[in-house]
View (cartoon, rainbow over the protein chains, first blue to last red):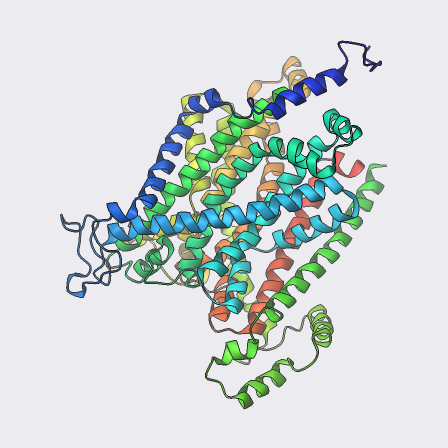
Length: 307
Length: 316
């Protein structure tokens, strides 16, 4: 019955595409706050994340002690009024180190994710938009990178390039690129063939303009979800690498190398490894749950639009 | 019709692994060499004399032009010759061979644990959909999925090896039962994440199936509800298991490195880690090649079994 797709037909699917697509790019239907609010786990995770971010930002004011100051006479102390979580193997205050570690973990994770997502999304959009041989080659390279277990890949590169925060950031961000590229490519492919893009092209819009004004805003939703999920992954990877000894080196406190130091004393004083571990677990779980909730409140909305 | 296109798909998919492997080992080769820094200097340290460096260059074949090195590397790799360890002098392939059983055992028991825990829970979750039990299960599995595996390992270690000394904290053990005993904590560590993924997959695939027409027909035919549910549950459990394994294999291998370190177990992960700290290039290279090979093969098997389980895939 809908065989005819004439433009004069007010019920034609062509018109609907344009209308609903325009609604999409207007941006006000991008994030469904109501749905998100109903997801209690998601809201809880958001609070936890905000809490950690505040800890990181105001670290210098909140920390009871200097995270680097050693006090060998007082090492391995238990919980006390002076040191809320005790002291570590060098007499440093555990609580302060955990708070400072929050800052480092978050900064490293944020920079890495920003870098990886930017490059990844660029690659994905180019691959999706151009299609053809460019798409094939880029995706093959992405597949090859994905075949490497991330930690091993990082270990290998860190071995040749040496430790260092910048190196760490660049290496881990490389590992993130394929995932982001895939998502961006998928989203680009979805939009590339829609009517409003064709309309824009026929009006003489340049490819760059189309990408910037049509494709990017619609990808923003998946970008946000990707950013959140990858932050938790990066925090885990960085902690893992520090635990193995190739990440950020002591005395700078990161959760990873605190766990590493604590691991040596795990039979005598397990709390040294336990406390940073708990902090890490809470943040990672919160980020993941938040990402899930975000995805739930973004996806069904886009699905509804596609009707 | 079905048989022949399946066969063609098998061949095509298997052949596809070759360019992927090729690309991967090329990346490995160039990462380990072209990256700034002379490998010989890195190995010998900054204090090395120029003669020592030159000597090492010769042994490692670094004095030849890069293209020549590459071709030699390719031909060696295809023949399975990964060279000799710079420190122990042992053949790299020998060391890899020795490490495989340990890591394989760990992977196997982890997956078994995940299946034994995850599949039934997934089925129950689908059966009791939208009840309090199901909601609680979903939250727990979300948390188990999100928790980093090496932290689960450390928590388990502290809880069941330090505080309540039931399980050993290091080593492999002797004999079948002994080895199993030493495998308990590490397997639970790796397995819980996979179990959580399985619960979600099983549950959602069962819920999808339950609404399909053939189920309604079976019910209309008078087949008892339990029978309808559980028979199809078993049949559908293969697809999620295969999917989850495929998705998690790289994570499993990465995790093996850390978990083998935490629990003091030998294996490929421990081998790779030691080699990296010792800057033992041939061993590192061999490990990486082997790991990517495993990932590629596992992905191949997953795709092939997919096409067997879901005929629509190879018919396109």
